[in-house]
Length: 115
Image (cartoon, rainbow, N blue to C red; front, top):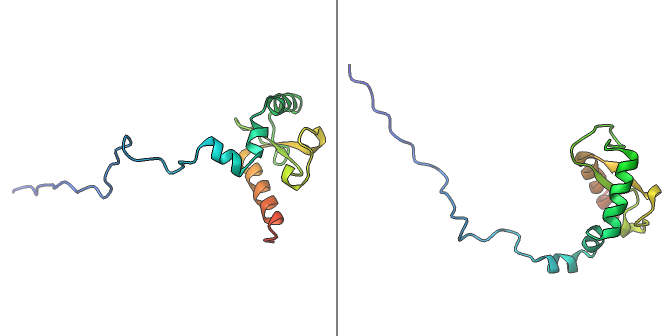
């Protein structure tokens, strides 16, 4: 009995040559900085030192859900855009990635009145 031959299936996606395809985000840091001035603050030395100090004091535990993830965020309770103090210890909290994202989305919805 003759076995049926297997044929090769043609790939559905064609590979992309990354040397010729431009990345999607082509805006420079300077353009992003003009669009969002808070980027300059978050990369400044005072913020980096403040962030390290607060995380060292409070530990790497999320203050919302209690998990201890690898990456933590120091988040403003009242965001700077909404009038929150930038380097006030009572205005910051240590959050995990998912809690930080949920909090930021809620703040944006409130800011733009999308409740």
